Amino acid sequence: MNFSSPNIETLAMPDRLSPTPAAALPFVYPLDDFYAGAGLRLPNFERLTGEQIPEPYRSLLVHENDMTPTLQQFHGANIHLKILGRAQRDDFYFREVVLQLDRSNQPVEFGANKVSLALFSPKARQLILEEKLPLGRILKDCAVAHSTVAKAFFRVEADELICRALEVPQSTAGLYGRRATILDSQKRPLSEVVEILPPLIQD
Image (cartoon, rainbow, N blue to C red):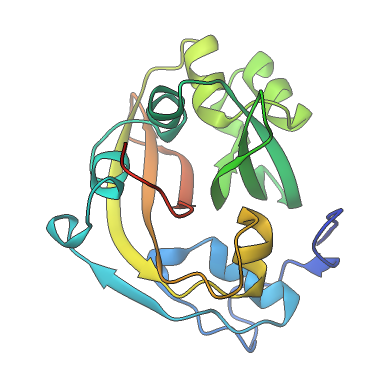
């Protein structure tokens, strides 16, 4: 599968068993698939406990809530999607995205997710594939019963791709993020998501 981006070169989504320059890390899947498809090596990821994440990142990452409303409350603005890459394999839809504030287009998150389209209603599937609203907003607007489970937390040494996506200098120090699973009411995974935050300043 191929996908394209206005800011990041065209990449290919590989089979996960294919040898690639990117070493697969289970706690950053599906982001590692996008790196593999680009023929890029993953930057250095250090897995952390929730207690090791400093504030204000801890309040934004270490919880069992959806990230969209969490970020909207923190920044005091609604959020929309900027798509960097996409692919579809059967009923699974993969995308690499930046979440941006509506009023300024300021990036507030970079990430990747794998969505199980078959588990969503036709209306929700349509909204997902329209690629305008974050998944958290669609879950709320379509009243999808779900729960979010944070599976891992990490610090990542931002590489060129991440810095470009978040519009931060290449010299930016390590960034913080998490991997989470969104489950439906039957505990089936609606989405697997990796979320990385830009540098933040505590007011």
